[in-house]
Length: 416
Figure 1 (cartoon, rainbow, N blue to C red):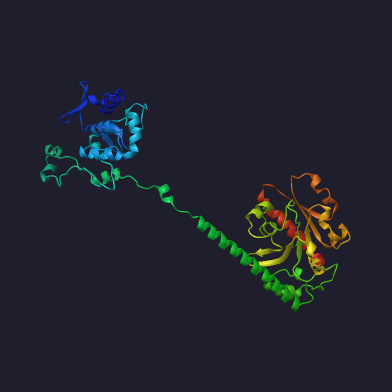
Figure 2 (cartoon, helix red, strand yellow):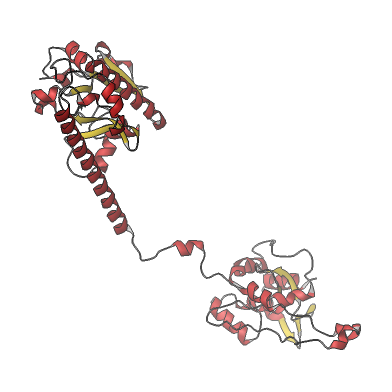
């Protein structure tokens, strides 16, 4: 039998105490005898094969701490079993596993014993390496008998690499123990909120300034029809300029107003109208309310853009028409309806026919809602916009439909 199988058989029977060292041989009772440095068929994960004396010493001392085991093995000048090999090797030697992938089916070459070295430890980097002749006699090259007596050269670099054990892996490097990055997250969130607030205020101030400038320079040009940017002055000059602020037919002076319901059961509110119209993404109102800090906004500015730097239209969105002045009603161009009669209570119009003749209406619903939810709305002159409950990539199509209808309505009013 081979040394590994005999050692395993004695370990399973608990008869390792019958294995004694006599000279350079390990005798297993009166049954077997092997050289103590005989190379076994058990291969280390580092690549080399373990010797018989190394496995016997480990089998007898596996119960002590690994550091104590290493120190004891060094004192006896024996090779050691590396930490990654301990559990699998012990399970195999004690018969807990029937086989092991580490056992070579082909007997290891005699030179493999040289590749089994002690485990490297930072606090004790010394390794018990054998002395190697510095050079072979020149005559050995011509004398085969003499060359056979020369021991093979030891590849010290390979031995060192085989004994290396990583102290840190990728996961341990990514771990930041006793460190909390919550403060960094809070600071970053505050900076982003401040940036958005300043950007919103700058856009709003810019719109007010532009409105005043246009109103003072050209009293024949409605603000709502001021599509395009400064680069479109030539086109604007050639376009017809209708008279301004004709109550009841034309748009009043100032930024046009879009009304949304203040009720939470409607899909489009003052909380999520900006994301829907500007970004083409529907975000539920309750989600926006939880994420928003501070009081509910009284007014939100939405813009339609052809590009990041080119705004073609801007509107104010409000949800409290009860606070409107007469001149504010002249600027109302669109309304998102709730589908309830009480939404139009105290509005300065005679009936629904007059409302939706002067103001374009939109009703946003989920596409799989029942027909009953839009039964009342179908009696009004409003555009029904359907969106999906889950397919967010379809939101942009719905938002563009709102913009197209609104722009068509604005053009018709400016030329009325």
